[in-house]
Image (cartoon, rainbow, N blue to C red; front, side, top):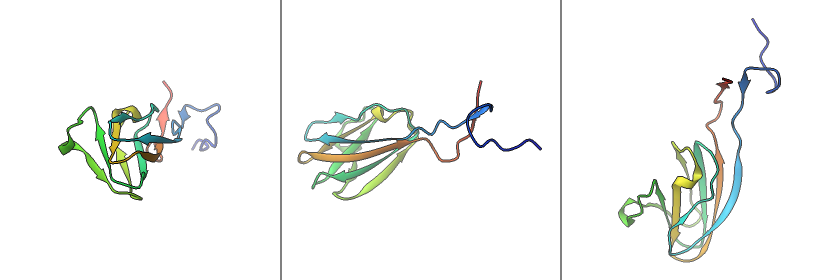
Length: 109
């Protein structure tokens, strides 16, 4: 049985789990989130008010995911954080963490 790789060097397996953490100011206008390749994003609302989260250009208020102040939620099934947008009832910051799914081994092509 071959040895299990302990690094990305010299192996056909690699770990694409590049994570990025950022905060973004949102207000009454819908704002597209910063662009990072990812499979999921966790958003923490610290605006002091409600935030509506949208994806894939579905910006009608009825399509928004309501995230109350101090709540967080992980949105999955993404290819990039820029497909997510947000608006808030008052200007404030949301905090975001992007990542690929855990334990997602890929083979190099």
